[in-house]
Amino acid sequence: MMTIIIISLLLLASLLPHLTFTAHVNVGIVDGTEARPHSRPYMVSLRTNGQHNCGGFLISDEFVLTAAHCRNGYEILVVVGAHDLRYIKSSDVIGVKSYIPHPDYIPSTFQNDIMLLRLEKKVALNNNVRLISLPKNGEDVEAGTLCNVAGWGAMTIGPQSYRLMEAFTTTKNQADCQSKWGSEFDSSQMICAYGSGGSCKGDSGGPLVCGNTAVGVTSFGDRYLCNSPARPNVYTKISPYLQWIDEQMKC
Image (tube, rainbow, N blue to C red):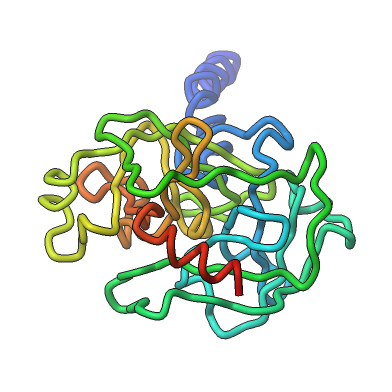
């Protein structure tokens, strides 16, 4: 009997690393880590029917930039200044006054997958709620640039994360993106990136951040495996849309 107990304990000890890993992988952002609370004060959660649906980011005290495919026909509420979505203050939940998807957005191909949300009221900027810069006109990120993504999305399997997660990812050259995605990738308006971690379901609309600048909007990836090296995550390149963004914000 003692021998059986010892063997059982040894087997349990050998399984502990696997069990610990499994317990931690079912969180947002594939192979990411929890972000330091409020270290990304530009991040917002877009909620439909009381649940997190997409990410987004503040580019002014009245506008959020996100992906056009995040508009699924339901009313969206924007949560600002959050880290753990289980603890949201009512004052941080803001309605959307108007939805402004790009007029040439094509759902079937994710072309022009970018959208502005005009908030019902201006947000009060503070340590937990801040804006992020956009690239300058004509400015593109070079291939091989180490960037980062964040979100409250899910792993390939498992529930979404309550807490904001983050991961580093590296931009790929356009030819590599084209070879991996074929006709689905449009180099004039898309960037792809792959790294030790990456975006997954529920992270759409969040920013691809290089340095202190949002250069892309999380758009799409492999249907079955998030952050796949065979199908690097694809982001809508922001720089081609700067004039459109500026025009909409002035309306």
